Length: 108
Image (tube, rainbow, N blue to C red; front, side, top):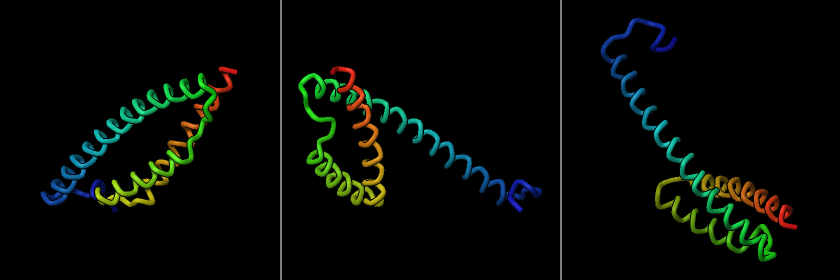
């Protein structure tokens, strides 16, 4: 049985109010993250174009390694699981590399 299935007393109403407030905050953060990711991909698109124009490889393993170390340190400082930060970064970088390969193939 959930709070919504029974008559609400003042404690239940307070819980639902707090839940709604927290969810609104989460929704705002999610929106900000989407906009930040869009900006990030605009920048990586330009990187891909520059790499393709100069015959550079789509991936840069040394840069990726340095970024992982930097992001893991930042995440630890922010009380975020560094393993999660690394997984997120690897997911994003895989997508970026795929974009860079498409750009390079279009230039050839």
